[in-house]
Length: 102
Image (cartoon, rainbow, N blue to C red; front, top):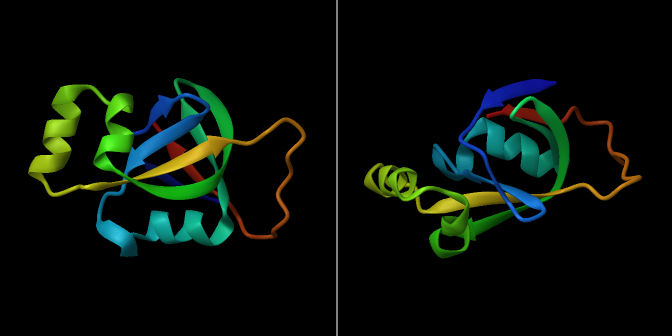
């Protein structure tokens, strides 16, 4: 199990995080390969599935304006959205999930 601190925000039934360090970041490659992970947000663990890269406009409602401005200033234009796993979901892989903490 890997743990990586990320700037995670909830958005509906999903969590959104800036895709820091681009498409080759280890945390992103791990979550993409596994297809799921565990997010710890405000002390609660959530299993998340279905990683999808989304654009600024889609991610913007999840973040306060000052964070969005910071992301744009450092060149982050892509975000990762992962939906909360449905009830009864179980991993169909033997890969260890990524754990992100916010």
